[in-house]
Length: 478
Image (cartoon, rainbow, N blue to C red):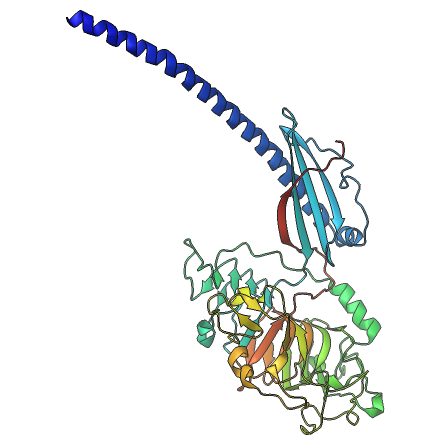
């Protein structure tokens, strides 16, 4: 009886074995083929990525290379005219071209696996963005509680220390290669809230300014070392409303006095709206009373700003005030009809700086429309007035965190190699880099509205990735 039971069971097991084993072997074989196939595809994809990386470093190799590309030129070896075989397992080729927008380059990398001939392609668009944040620095940054930054991040290779009232402001984003204090007091992960601050972050490369070229430009335009070494100088009818520049000082005076450059009413200079580069040599201490210029200031020493900020569309036309000659800044009659307030462009991604506070409500920050949405253009001071010198509507204090008025002190970039001291009104549309401390006194809030399109002479190319996508490989023969 026992033997009769065991034999059929044994036969059944063998039948099942011979049925299942081939299925398992076939599944293993197919899975192995699929794994190998995916591996081969990964080789081609990795080669395409390597091609883009090589193209990226080629474009960054020099400012002349970048300029050649954006002017429509082609680079030998980077126009699908060379196949590179320096990576094991396959080959790749690269195409670099200009566009699609101004100061952008498109890099296409194609990779091919040697054994399967599998091809993959990746397209990346980069933009040369000289200035990547509203405030940048290669050292420690201590934002003042009286200074507000809109539309662009604070970027530092050193520590960012939010002391005093600045710690209660939850915008813009703050990126530091070291720590963002007091948000983070150690370098233990995660080092971020993924909304407002990032410590131990791979901060983008900072610009290396071409000070020699900037100085030469200032010399050619008469904007080199402007100011009086003893008393304030100012534009007026006797000097043709053009500041005298060459603040070399009186050699009979000693040291500090000889290195002071004093300017008053720079907004009345004929060149106030020309977008020029203004430059002061290292060791010069610059004093500006009543600012108001479209251009960029490079002060290699200390800078002190006092008085009022006076740049706006209502002050002058082609160097002259259309309402009666050169008037005193902020001294005109508010009853006179003027051309309106100052409008500026807003970065497309401005809303990212306010993720910590942003909701579906509007006017929570300058140019806020609703959740994750900002206007393309913003009216400084949020004026609803048609008169000049007359600004102050509901949004100004609420969404700007302080009164900016309907004018600014500088439309451009500000570089200060020493200490920046602001004792009165000085708002900006642009960006700022201060090597030393920033000191703000008095009751005035300083607002910096970021301009993402600043273009300045540099010795390096700073490329920011704007888009990435995998595309179909081209049909051109390898």
